[in-house]
Image 1 (cartoon, one colour):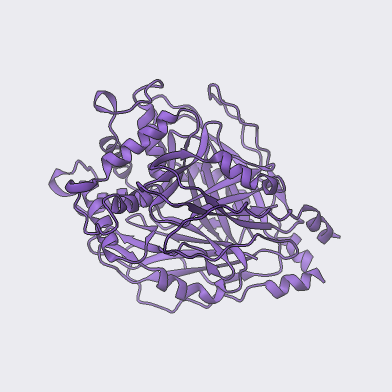
Image 2: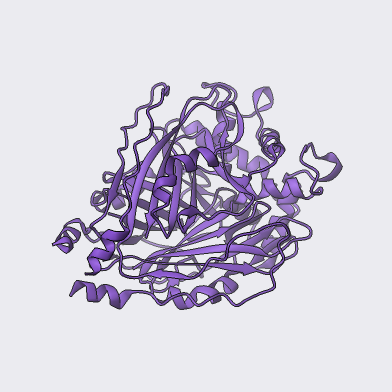
Length: 183
Length: 183
Length: 183
């Protein structure tokens, strides 16, 4: 009886996107078909990943993250993966996964935009000159990411990767809570 | 039998917010009543929308996005809509939906804050002078948004709209993975 | 019969994280065990919280937010909490919850980075000199947050808190749509 209510509220499939001319040179992403799963309960899985200390700067961590969750990811046909770093002086962002110069240049930008040391106007200095800038950078890039899951994998673009941005000079280990939800 | 377990874990309704004096001039948003749906399975729907190339700058895309998903949105009483752009030189953000000057000024800001051309300190230059700035802007605004769904619609504020921020001079089509989840 | 399909798609538990040396001085977060709930439907709850007007600057609002939702949070063993501010001149971010100087310094940074008044190049000035800067700051920090729920509580780090960043000089009340989802 209750299952009938479920069926009643089940969504109609999303109509396929109208085909369009798509010009994306040297990229390939498999076509994502429309999917609507009506008869199964959503699954949840949650774990905390501990990343060892990284030097100040931007770091590609997709392989580490995927290694920790791939077995579980494989059980989801459609869903969302949420990543949450439990710290206020590091951040998570998604950006280019290929040329490490992009990560170095991003660190250069952050240091240029957020004053540090004698020229900085900060009141909060008791934890070192790099601490207040780290807090600001943390809010600029954010502490959380949500990524679609499709057919058992993170459905990110060909050139996208997950970055850990470490904003402290002498970093500690960083904890990331991963929550998977889907069908 | 299993359904009883479901009922056992069903949440209590959120108690209504204590009424408060609310002064928001010239805005109207319908009151959102508390909702807790206990007897139905969450629904999932996912599709990839291809946005045709846009010129560099900030663009209001709410109408395009809603047109693609409104039929499916109408099947959700309560949920979340997730938007994920699969690129590292464009971004998604939510901002003012009315005066296009706001979008132009935001583009002005981004160009002012991120150096480009001869004065820029970037190492990553092989894809053109606008490429590294585009990567930085992409992380500043982010590649993903999550928006509440209420009564079959995106529950955004009266003046809010979804923006595609294109950071390249010669843009290609952009793919946005949309994931809907709710009851 | 349909329940069998559900069981078929239920995920395997996430394997426990490999133990690692963890050095995080003066912090304690309880170990998060792996959880996968297979037999129960996800629950949804949604409400709109009205925050009274705050002065321009960054404000710690975790206590206010938690007070509004704690009764419902307690019903979730595992899930996600989504916070969405329905405005384009204020923002939500997660940052340090202890020293109020961090909030003051962040406001100092935002005012330094986004020009305001005579020196500003904005076209959109009809709503006052603080309006266009407010829109830009809104997109820099963002209007939405997703936070993991674990064992009935927001699973944020020891030093993390939710901030309301008010970017207008004469602010009005601000509405935040909260959506809880989990098991």
